[in-house]
Image (cartoon, rainbow, N blue to C red):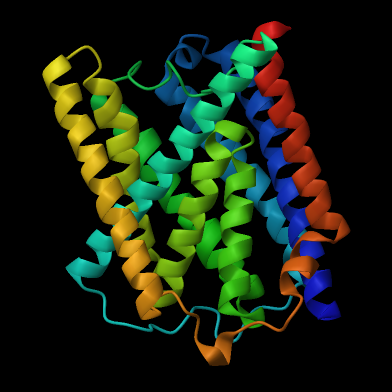
Length: 306
């Protein structure tokens, strides 16, 4: 397991550098564009496209350079474990919605209690007010098409290529954790991590990253486009509330039944050795990545009070 611990540490350092480089690149690119085309950066969609260039055009190569020394898995993509059917995709969607809404409700409840007790007004949603400032098609492109495609390629396909050889459960855990941490704030961390676990499982199960992209896109469309669009309409909000409750219950039932039936059990031939959780977390690179996330999260939560 020492070999895996070194690989996990390298992944942690790579993710930390990926995140930091992306943040710096975004600021520099937006500043440069603002000087040359000042009107362009007034559009949220244009700003987010520039952000994606900073993340995946500049930050991602840094991750790949640092992790170059981590041997690729053989095979570099998982073998399909079960047929891809509409039922499988629908069940995954319901579990994804359930994970997202349950985690978000719990987080918002904790933050509300903490704010009331401490007297501090915490910044709970860093995306609030961003969606809806561009045209519908621009919002769909920058929130629901580009991120799911690129995130699935990086956090599922690329990470499997690097750590898939150490076991499917290792990959699912590392993929979800790195995905959640990369969002850089507590509000998104909890549901993004759970969703990351689910999408990593779907990738291992189907052997094709396209299905994760599809599920990811639909979840982003509902949460990022549909939900903000119906604010102020009581009838639509009521119907949406019924939908949320229905998919939450369905998703929870699907998860419990799937757990009992062993649908989430990893292939015995792809099971990791004992101690892999400790080796995943207790290494210098991953701890640096986690510490970076904690520091940034504290700063974001404290912003309204600075």
